[in-house]
Length: 391
Image (tube, rainbow, N blue to C red; front, side, top):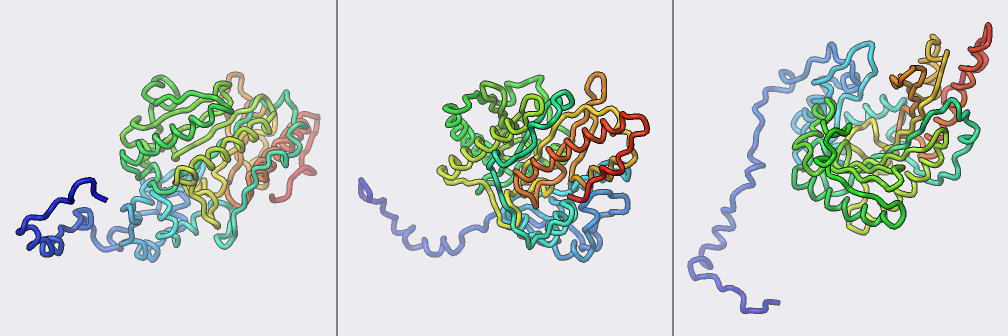
């Protein structure tokens, strides 16, 4: 109801209003036409491309996706650009080579993304349903790990929020709005974890004050470091990155081999934040067949990555190590720590398993790797009888 009388249109305005509304200008964004040739002429050269994107992309698929875009304007060329700018090489790790600009990307371009996800995540079928399990008490055997061989552990998970484009595509306004939501949500963690939110401008000299090459290629680093922030709990066990690789990324660390401690911290914090974001009308993005949806198809499902830093003396040189890790669904890299011999062992995929199952794969896998390493320390030691079945 008007507190005062509503404004009255002048006779001329009233007379011409219907005409003016019919002549309402078209949104300029809808008039944009990219100056492209035919799909055949625009199809990228993939001869020396070693990404998963290149493994599934064909001319026929490219022609089907060519003139499509999501409602926010993310095109198929935007999706495959990271893999074209960094094609990788035959000897290095194979990257996924693509990125989603928003949740709708996985629907509009499902013909492409479904194949990439099934290939990257070792046969996960898009007809499957992703399950979640945050009951950290279901994790078994972590207390049986050798505390002399496990240096540290970490569990991290990403989340994206309904109603916003992903970091590779979001606008400055969206990013700032996401930071505002994060400030509100994280302030409610003070009663449990307690912490402080810093903008990245305040963190000059830290590891993320300069974006990585990968972040530059995917567009995540646009307007850096505007509206990026880091929240740290008082005990330093929980860190939340805002608007970096995803809308939110939680990182929990545990002492020594106590990965259950880190996992418990992650589960409790994620569930608390999820409830807070729901109350604000922006729940975390979840799809039945994809689980938690993030910008990279390499992270969909749980969005979770768990790792342990492990001391190994012999196994890292074994010729069967690659096969062993593949069977265990794990990855390993040299940390470059002083003195050497310390390797990061981490989960290799994020979908097709619950959160607890992924942590269990890591715990059981590290336990076996340490046993193999000790076996190889013995004269004439062989690990043939310890070779695992495919997990």
